[in-house]
Length: 84
Image (cartoon, rainbow, N blue to C red; front, side, top):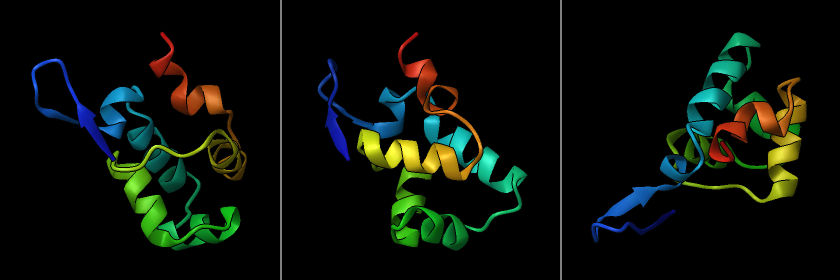
């Protein structure tokens, strides 16, 4: 998912979310989960998890909550930097 930036270029969803994709990947790996396992736990495809981790997809609030719960953390811990 991309949008236009002030410079006329494109920015990735992760660029707007304060690095949530990196946080998701780190928490997932730290928990010993595969992308497929996390996807199954939250009811989405593996490709959706990949897209969130690479910053190409910004999830709905509901999906963000499901991901955070599956990783044993809070939405704020994953996406909180976007609000700062």
